[in-house]
Length: 229
Ligand SMILES: Nc1ncnc2c1ncn2[C@@H]1O[C@H](COP(=O)(O)OP(=O)(O)O)[C@@H](O)[C@H]1O
Ligand SMILES: [Mg+2]
Image 1 (cartoon, protein in one colour):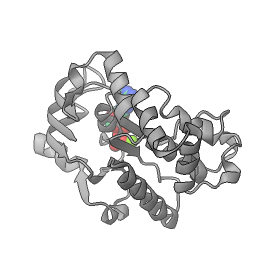
Image 2: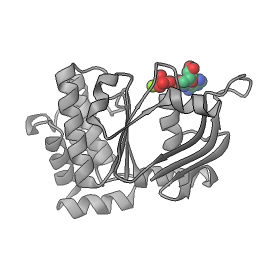
Image 3: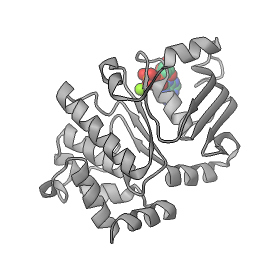
Image 4: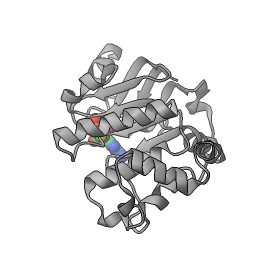
C-alpha cells in the first residue's frame, strides 16, 4: 500500500536538520497502523507527505504503486481524491452545510469514489446517511448545521466523509484528542469496522500511547527518524 525510501523533508530550505528523515517505511494493504511520537516530532508532516499535500525534497513515496513525487500537482490532487480519505485534527468541515452535505463532499471530486459509493447504496445521499449512522451520528442530526454539533459529533461527520466511496487509504490525524477515554476507544472501534467493510488501510496518528493496543501495528516516529540519522 505505502512504501517510503530515503525520504527527506524540510519546511524551510535554511533548516539545519530536516523535519523528517525516513530511510524506509512500508505499510501493507489492510493494516491498522498506530503512529505515535511527541508533539512537534513530525507526525502531521508525514501524513501530509503520504497524502501528497506536501512533497518530499528527496526520496520516493509510493502509494498503490504510484510515485507521488513524480506526479504533477493536478494529477496528485486527483490521486488524493480518488484514493485517500483524510480525517483532519480540526476536522475541516464546512460549518454552514449539514452533516449529509459535508459527507457527500467527500466524493465530489472523484468519479471513482462516486461510483464505489453507488455500489453500496442507491444514491450518494443514502450512502452518506448509512455512513453517518454507522459512525454513530443518529438521523435527527443529519440535516442540521454542522456548526451546532458537539466536537464528538463533528468527528463522526469527518470520519463518514473520509470513508465515502471506500478509499484505499484512510488517514486520521489525532481525531480523538478532544474525547474522553471511553469515547475514544468506542470511536476507534467504529473506524475499524468501517475500514474492514471498505477494505481500507488505516494510518492513525496520536500522541496518546494508551490507544496502541487496539491496533495491529505500532510505529514510533522517533524511532523511525533515529534509524535514519
Ligand atoms: N506549515 C508549516 N510550516 C513550517 N513549519 C511547520 C509547518 N507545520 C509544521 N511545522 C514544523 O514541523 C515540525 C513538525 O510539526 P508537525 O508535523 O506538526 O508535528 P506533530 O504533528 O508530530 O506535532 C515542527 O517543528 C513544526 O513547527
Ligand atoms: Mg500534528
